Image (spheres, rainbow, N blue to C red):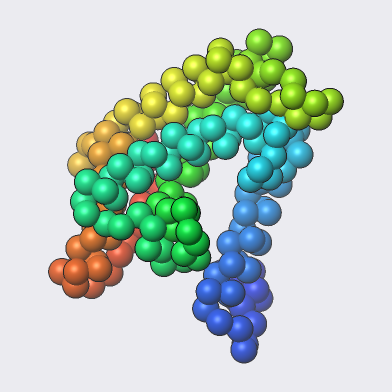
Length: 193
């Protein structure tokens, strides 16, 4: 808690404070992972092997979250935290935040640690320092992310499939917007198996 308090400065807006805290936490998180497996850091448009795989996994997650939003009747383009920009599903980007680590990072990072992903057949070289997933690499990422989405977890004291929790959280957010719930509670990672 002390680090968070140090990051919040008087005179800045709440959104700017959140961005500062998010940046601080993200740097610590990715820095910790780099100690376990070398990669250049989290680069959203990065074309190194690690970022290419993570970005592909996030794309799968974005689709899952957007489908859940549309099914519930939430407009995926009206965001809370992420800025609304033409063509960007800001609400999807907001909701994805609570699922990145338990769905994608926890599925893909172990593939690199166990050397199941990262070999020659998994990537195609685009330039001396840039790679993209090969069809074989894509298949590994898809399998890992969907296995994770179909994993049984304990959530709200019930056993649920993780992809159903994504839908439940979208419904929870919708009820919050409609005023039938007074608080929106993000996914609690401690409840995941």
